[in-house]
Image (cartoon, rainbow, N blue to C red; front, side):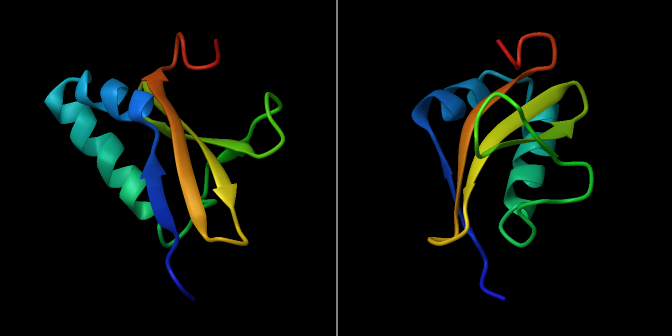
Amino acid sequence: MDAYEVRLKSSALKELKGLPKRDAGRVLSSIRALRNEPRPRGAKKLRLGKSLWRIRVGDFRAIYEIDDERRIIRITRIRHRDVAYR
C-alpha cells in the first residue's frame, strides 16, 4: 500500500512550533505515523466536519482531513485539548 502525503496548513505549522519541544516531538512523530495508517487505533471521526478526524497525543490534539482518492492528509489544527474544538 502506498503511503499518504501529509501536509500541514501554515496555521497548524505555527501551532506546532509554539509547543514545548518535548510535546512538539511527540506530536510530530504521531503525525508522521499517519502516512502509513491515516486512521490509527484511537483516532476519532469528528462531528464538526464531514471528513475531520483527530488523534490524541498526550494533552494535545491534531485535527486533520483525509483525502483517500489523492492519498493526502491535511493537518488543520494542533492544539491543547482545552481549546482544540473551538
